[in-house]
Length: 164
Ligand code: HEC
Image: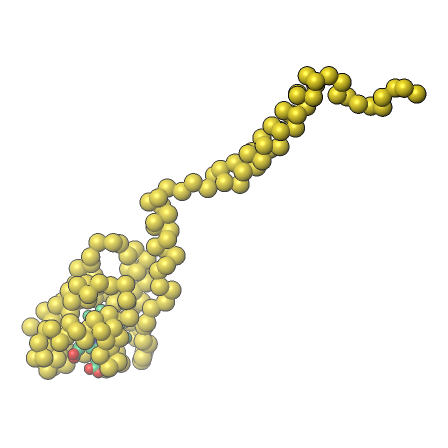
């Protein structure tokens, strides 16, 4: 019974081959596994910026519903919110017409000179300030906090122009 049982490695050369294989094969498997997990996840930076903006967009917006005719919900305009500044009319349609279009909740109705005369007489800077920061039941920026101050001012200019 001098036979060595089942030892496959009989020469130094075989030992080296076995050692190398034992080292390389697990590394290869780990590499392929990592490729499988991360391989297809590369995103176009432009696309990812858009998707981040989609995810951080405010979920809801303030729309007061009084009486029979609900104001048109400005949802579509929000969904398309581009980076470039909006015109006064665009901002108005997006954020202000819900209340000012029909004169809801005591909001001075757009185009109603009587409702606006005393307000306009305060001077446009007061109106800007009240529209940007809020005033009594008028919410700051009409509740659309993503609007810039200049966009809100443009919407005030649009409203003021309607009662001149
Ligand atoms: C949720 C309803 C609502 C929305 C939306 C809204 N307003 Fe108003 N706004 C009001 C009410 C109510 C008042 C009257 C407040 C008062 O005098 O009691 C008012 C008043 C104003 C005034 C007059 C402030 C003053 O000093 O007399 C301006 C200017 C104005 N809003 C601009 C805007 C602009 C611009 C937007 C859109 C960006 C907007 N509002 C969106 C409800 C709203």
